[in-house]
Length: 283
Image (tube, rainbow, N blue to C red; front, side):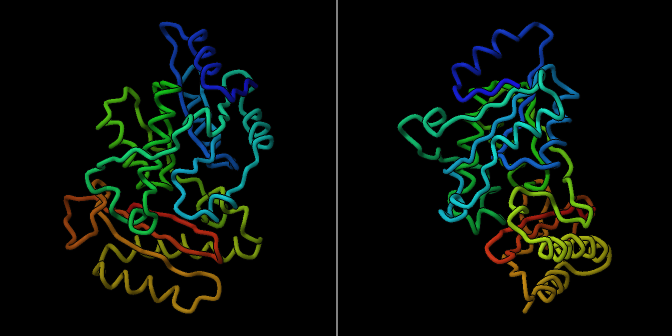
């Protein structure tokens, strides 16, 4: 498998491979790959001639230094995992910070039309400027035809689509379904920091979201939010950071149910210092 740490070498290889019928897929990751990432890569392989997978823990999207320092870094294992899918049609880009940012590691400021002010944006200062900055850099380096993102980070997916719109980058952003553990826990690189018992207990998060979906058919959204809060009150493992039911397009919190709109429920929970997020479509 080809692994590049230099954007110049990566771009030279892509340029050499490109033909009139060539299609380039891209899956940006921060590594610690799991089956959820592989599902994105498989989607990209099915629709493109060549797939670039970037592995880069981006410092500008972390508002918590401890979260950055403890984020798992498993490059060799990641490469071996990708080789189980293909050794010839996947290329890995694992750059250094300098290769991406040069001497100026600053986040660009974006106006995402209010998408950045909800959920994650309320609790992670500057996070989405960091996300927009790194994805914009990677899109400009890789120049993919199609880029694939998981719906677990649904707010991030909407923001990246908005970033592409306002910067007029020529890339098709494709959202892919959430991959889950057998017990329903949304797959995440952070899950490896949970013990076996904690992983089993964390199944509660998705069970609550499933109940929310059922309740949404006939209950008031305020009552549902209050019910979710009570599920985590004095829980021995979990601390609820937020729960929100929002319009799935603009992410604005629901005020009154409108049958012509689609809604999603979003949740963030701490298990000790491990932050877990999830969401579910409600209608």
